[in-house]
Image (cartoon, rainbow, N blue to C red; front, side):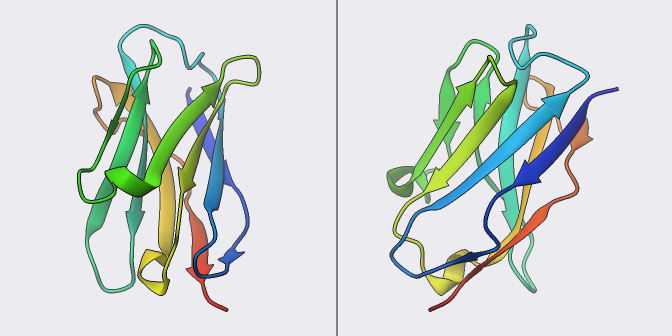
Length: 118
């Protein structure tokens, strides 16, 4: 069973960089055809896809966040990391990592709350 666990600071100051890591167990992040994604849900809003990194290391981002987003991976630790630059209070949300074949949301982490505030 694939399990994902998000980790990172719960509070980030405006203009700083939000950095979250997803630690994966039960499967390698290089397994063929699996995509490893980040999404978020702000209070009172729907789920917003942020981006993904594939089994081969290819990345794709939500166009609305692309200029501020970077997703990378550490295959030796079986982790992938989200970095979101220049955050504002509008980036306050519950952040989730997930995985599935070709981007399907088959497995999800429990989520982690990030608040952007001075």
